[in-house]
Image (cartoon, rainbow over all chains, first blue to last red; front, side, top):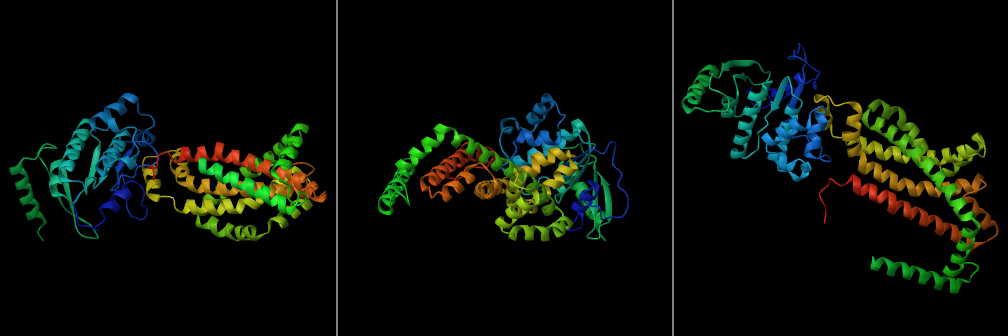
Length: 197
Length: 246
């Protein structure tokens, strides 16, 4: 989901996750409606370790599953650290681990890679793509970054400035996590064409 | 540690000097007080009185902290609860300790229940105000996180609310402990047949400064032990996640 600042992307995520009740309409969640949410800020408990932070959200997770998740997100070495000892990038990764740990039916990501350095964001994006492919929860990602959107999404939703409407819905054919330059360029051209008033 | 011992030595020296100039009757020296302390300890009266007073302190402290924290949390989280309870809180905060004690004894008789209730009621509003401040500063972002991840209520209280309240609870506990034991002594002086406060009252009527000092010192020592063996280790445990400050 791509749209200008202040158009209500975060509000939409808050409505879907039942944090905002001031709306008209209906929210239909897939399956049991179990949510995994990555907020803009990591929102970790500073007084609990990395492992405890993840476990508190997913108390029924087995030790093996947790170990595998930490292994994949390269958090194994940090599992006993407190969030205050982590960089922002690592803290974001813990938030990602927490969202995946609950084995969500719907994964909501609110600009999860904003204000990370480009290289690190790229790696996290690849990890996210891998996790989504492996566990395939329905995923809604909010971003400002068109390349990120093209690289990760199956469908792109473009929102207008507030009050937001969906301006265009554009399918992405290239496999997740890969970026074929020609395809990306073609997609960018189509987006520009479709969004022209 | 060394400096502390020197400081303590200086205090005892000043005490001895003061006793020399004021006379043994007004200010008995450390030696006389130590002897009186030993005497009381041998007869068993010291241990009994200390235990009685300590039990009252513990009961009043637990009641005041438990109720005060619950009320403070409710007032900090709910505007309605705050509006309803705030006038009561202001009345209780400004009611002199002595008035509460005397009324408790008149209404409930000269009983331990009345004594403990009076002390708890004195401490209650202060604990409430402190915890309310803490409840107001709770991070709503973490509440939302707990909500979307469907954490159970007792998990939220234990892992999200209590850790954020910990500094406020610690402040309330620390100031509360010293306040409670001082008020317990007054309560005992006014209407109990035992305890440190009662003994001090008797010593006052006999003008026995030695015994007053002996009991006061003994109880200060007990509270010091509670502080170093219970309160401080607990605080260190609670703050273990904080990055060390130099």
